[in-house]
Figure (cartoon, rainbow, N blue to C red):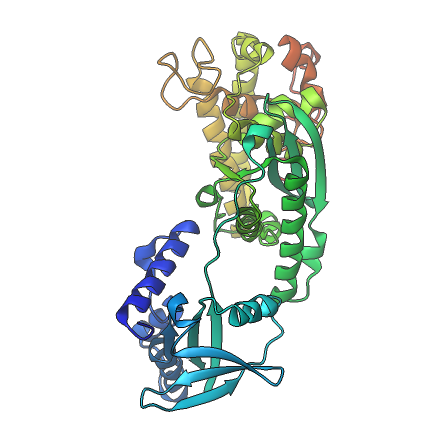
Length: 450
């Protein structure tokens, strides 16, 4: 059955499953590669460059041979690995009763596991590909998942990432939702890796540290759902510095490695929707427990994985019902909108004008959000229950109303100053003056996300 259509069908199914796991649309998979397909479709090449692209496309489309392993045949009938005189050889069935032999040269870390399968006559799949006139072999096999040894019944180890400083935040959450321990793992080594291969090794090392810690405490691993990870946005201006940092994030790659390794070692993986986890962490747990914003976000992810819902603290509910606070914040954003419009009109640089336009749109969204808040702040879990216009989320209203107008930054570093509001709903320290807090104001220069 090694050369049959059945093996090809299984490989195609694996590609589809992989695409879905990465959150990609499987209908967009192009056999041979989308990059080459789009290049040929544009028909803008000629001569030698066109021949080179066609050669590569033909190799991708036709230079492929796949043989599925079979346990009853002692490994793989048509592409069989043999050990001779201390070397590993691949015997290729030519179909006419003859064989060709190729020496396997590799230093892959899974080589010993492959050799063990050869000695044990266990099945393995072999794929031969043609690239630039050379034949490359890829060996894969299926492993039974390990029995669960660490589950969320004992709690979870939750993960979140931070760009500056560049590290992974970990929060160990007990079954009753309490924070037992928190720590960070530096990701600077990932940033310093000289190439993709070195970066992959560092990411695997970090994944091993995370899974080992989960096993040590007998808890599950809780992460954001892979398909909900933000993909960033294109554009110039204020987003450029952030995108440069975001490009450092091998976050999705790291989470996939953590998930894969956890399942192999018997650690349960719990994925949650990351919506508003950072906002809730910064508003609630960072000031309450004196945590950094990324550890606080990881804590919220952990609690969500255990089934807990975050109620709005009474102090914040009181603040949202305070008419003087709402008038103050609406006045702040109304002034900011006017200020940004004037600056944009006077700015000759198109890139800076685009940045000002982005800030203006953000200020207008915040003003609309604050203006739509009527009466009760809505459900403490963030839904409206019919008391507020659809889409009003009290956590997002609080973020818009406190961070920039009161703390002077869209993503403040010092969140401890929210404690008086969190515990009592009092914002006397800001209300006492005629204008906004000294760190804020519509003319505040430091307003971009960090």
